Length: 308
Image (cartoon, rainbow, N blue to C red; front, top):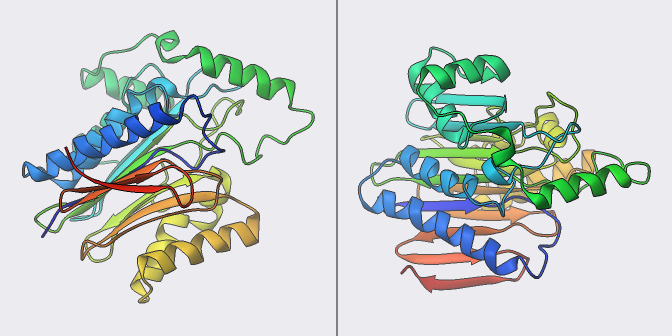
């Protein structure tokens, strides 16, 4: 089986022109790291964790050290990961003071009998697992402080669930053994209520992986994604015989028509096909298969090169 790795940097508004190149470089770097893990014989699970970790460590993306701020000016992060081989999964929500929530989610999957830990329970588990605590201020960027101020200033004119700042990061992979996996991580929505949890840590909404079908990671308006169970909905259409593109279009179209919710998905099938679709203005993404790197940010903006 030829390995495949696809990553996304969130369904978002148009990327600022002065940030476009940094965003593109970040998404390509994550895809390259994930694919090299696969080429080295690593598992799909290792690859998606590795790719998402790169994006959590990049302040250009809404995850890890680039996470947006809640109403109190604090970072609260969500993440989940799933192994399509045996449907094992791990998730965390409302996590603070951890550099890489995706690593903590994987530990929940592998070191506990549970699928999901939150807030203080997740924090105590992280400490027990030896994950170093990062000062909360270390995860706060100047750009996100200004973004929160702007959002609070405009609050009267725009609803909190407006189609802005829907950033998430995610990855899906197929390894040489035919196993698939997904990983998704986010800082959530700007100016969200403390304790708000979106789709990202919810298995079946923020992502899903099953060797019998494929893997998917989603991004967009979390409340809308949860209401339609977007990840599992798209894979259901794949099960029914739709192509990955058709399944993505149907599922995203349903969410948009029913709830006016915007979002995006990346998918890989058990056969090694892949697809990238979104209804938001932009979605940074990259995919690697057979040594070819595909990447883009806006519609009709795809470049294909040989992987370095």
